[in-house]
Length: 177
Image (cartoon, rainbow, N blue to C red; front, side, top):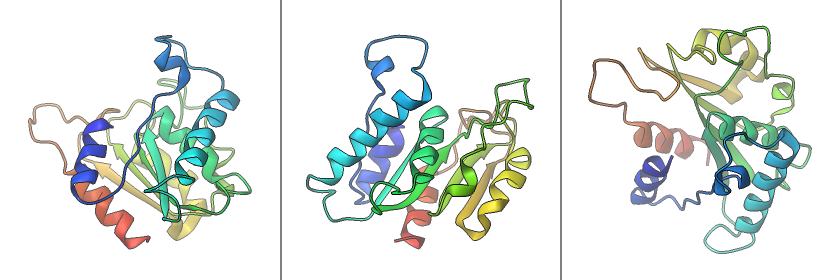
């Protein structure tokens, strides 16, 4: 995420990164969803009250669980007090590996902003094909970009070059400003 944030900043996008509290405290087990949402909401709310974010369009996102928490915030009634312009998720964790019956989708129909999901075709947390029917409910608000041969980290076995995620994300964000 830091590499993506840096590449977006080079393209003129103001970016803020943060770690959840459990990560800062070097705990291996993530906090429960309400605490993760609260932390994320506090970061976004604080950032939106300070330059350079004050008054600007805001996109939120993250990798895996961080991206899922971003979709939770986007599904809230206030969607960060109406400031949210979109969500970018790298590797949406649709279900735990090997447990496709444990879907993490109940909040998705409440999302009212554009969502970009970049998903590896070999992602054990859910392939792009597994995601499509659940995000289809959002209609044109949802874009799923599949990384051919990519895993949950979007890495592709046997290839040293990586997809140009900053260009993909920046281009998508520009479409939704």
